[in-house]
Length: 435
Image (cartoon, rainbow, N blue to C red; front, top):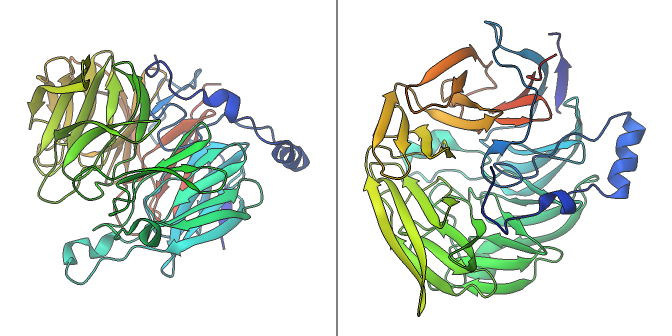
C-alpha cells in the first residue's frame, strides 16, 4: 500500500516531437483533476522529458538551497524496488517498481497519493551465474505518456499500454515470443519512444532488433533485423539528421541509424564493450551523434553526412577519458557533462574535440533546469552545480533520505517547480521554485 506523508517545509534537432500538441490531457483526465481540486501540472511525459534531451523548461527556480536542502513537500512510499525515474502528464506522476517479484506501473497524484497500480510482467532477477548482479533486481524503464495512454516495457519483456487516468489495460505484447527474443543480462531497461502514431522499442530478437508498432494497438509496422549485437540497455531517439528522419540508438556492438519510415539500416559505427552494456542514450545535434559507454569503452562523436548511396558515418573523435556508466550525459553550449565509470569522477569535455576541461570526484546521474545541473551522487547527495567548462562549481548540496537498499541510480527530474528524486521504495518531492 502506498502512503504519502506531507511535511513542512535550445532544444533538439528540427522535426523532433511536437509534444505540446499531443500531450493535452483527455477530457476525462481534466474532469478527474477538477474533481480532485488540482490544477493540471507541467509535463515531463517520458524519460528525459518532452524532447528526450534531459532539459527542463522550468523557470523561476531557486538559485541556491538552505543547508538542509529545499523544502520536502511529500514522500511517497510503497513503490517497490527499482531504478525507474518518473514521468508527469495530465496532473499525474508515473513510475514503476517491483513488489514480491512482480513489476507494477504506479500512478500518483500531485500530493503523492496512489491513484492506481497495474502489473506488467515478472521483474528481472539475476541468474545464479551472475552473482555480481544479484543486488540489482527491480524495475528499470520509465513509463511514457501520450494522448491518454501510459506505455511501459517491463524487465522481462512485457510491453503494455494503460489508460492514463484509470490504469485499465489497453493492450499488451510479449516481446520474447513475438520477436524471438531473450531477456537481456540485466533485464529490459528501455523507456519506449512514441513518434506520432507509432511506438518504437528494441526487442533485440531474431525477428526484430528494433520494432515499430502502432501505439493504439501494438500491431507491427516494421521490424529491423540487420543490426548486430544484443540489447544495450539504452533508449532510442528519433530525429531529422543528414536530411533523413532517423531512429538512432545502440546495440551492444554498434551505434546505428535506421530509416524511421521503413526500418532500413542507414549506418552503423562499431561501439561496445565486453560487458554488452551501453546504457546511456545517444545525444544528437548539428548532424552529429555522441555516444558513450562504461567499462572503459569511453566516448565517441560521429558525424553523419548525406552521400550518393545513403548516409555516411565517420568518427570525429573518440576518447576513454569519459566512459559514462548509466547516469546520463548533457550537451550544453558546446560542452559535455557527465560522470565516468572506470574514468572515475565527474567530467567536462569539449564536444568539438573530445579534449578534457576538468575532472572532479564523484559519480551519479544528472538533469538540467534554468542554467543549473542537478547532480545526484549514487550515494544520495544531490548537488546544484553551475555548468561551466572552467571548473566544477558546486553551489550547494544536501543528502536525500533513504528509500531502502541499493544505490541512487534513478535519474532526477525537475518539473513544475518540483524536484523529484526516486530511491528504491520511495519518491521524494521537493519545492524548488523561488518564492
